[in-house]
Structure formats: structure tokens, C-alpha cells
Amino acid sequence: MRIDGRARVFGDHINTDYIIASTRKRDTLDESVLKQYLLEAVDPAFAATVRPGDVLVAGRNFGCGSAMEIAATVILAAGIPAVLAQSFSRTFYRNAINNGLLPIECDTSQMVEGDSLTVDLGADGMTVTNARTGNRVTGAPLPPIMLDILGAGGLVAYIRRNGGFRT
Image (tube, rainbow, N blue to C red; front, side):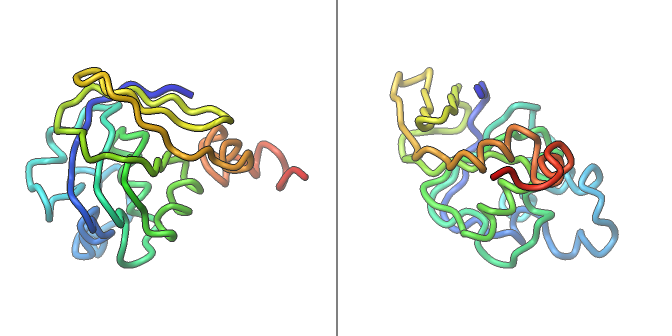
């Protein structure tokens, strides 16, 4: 899997209520509607500037807070296929995988807003190349089952395709 995208950079401790505010979920849980409010608590203009293929880049503890699955699906609905962060909340990380959003734990300290990034994901690991600096950072390889779930587009699609978990 390969993703080419523009870096959209945020800091540490971006919680799920920053990703999509609880007040917005009172009206609807339709991610195609909610995507217009993506990360509005951090940057009110952000959602209007997202382009399909953009990549979220963050610091530590991305997705902390409440265990809302909608946080991952709203990111995907906005056309963002991956989140790069120094670390993730474990719940957000699993929600991301289960919904087909690629979470990559790697060093993001040298990435800045607008950088052109290439993410290469394989069985042996992940590499993120920054076209501006030429820097390459690596992420730990994902277990094969997670790669299969991501490749299917999420857990539900994986189960439908395979009739359950493959052994």
C-alpha cells in the first residue's frame, strides 16, 4: 500500500472530542455531514481546507479521551487515509484499524504543515518519506491480520469477505 499526501500538522494530545465535538453528534452521526466539523475545536477553518489524500500528522497521544468510533470514521469521510503520530490512544488505534484508517506510529517531529509525504506500507514495516527534507522515518510493521483488515477497508468488510477470521 502506498499513500501520497500533504501533511496537516497538529500537536500533542488531540482528543476525540477535538476530532469531532460531542455537541455536533447530538444532531447526527452521519460522518458525511460531520466531516465539515473535523477538528474545528483546534482549527475552525481546517475542514474547509482538507483535500482528499491529506495525511494527519500529530505528536503524542493522538485520539485520547472518549472511545468514540466516529472520530476515526469522520477522518476517513474527509478523505484522509492515514494518521501519523508519535503515539496513539490504544482505543483510537484499534478503532482506526477496524474502520480502515491507517494509524502510523513514527517520529513526526520534523514534519511541518504542507510537507509532501509518501507512506509505503508493507509486511516488513512502514516508511514515510518527506519530499521537502528527503528524510525517511520508519514505523513498526503491523501484524498480518491488521494489514488484512486495512486492505479490506475495515473489520466489517474483512468479515464479509472472509466469512470470519482466517486462522
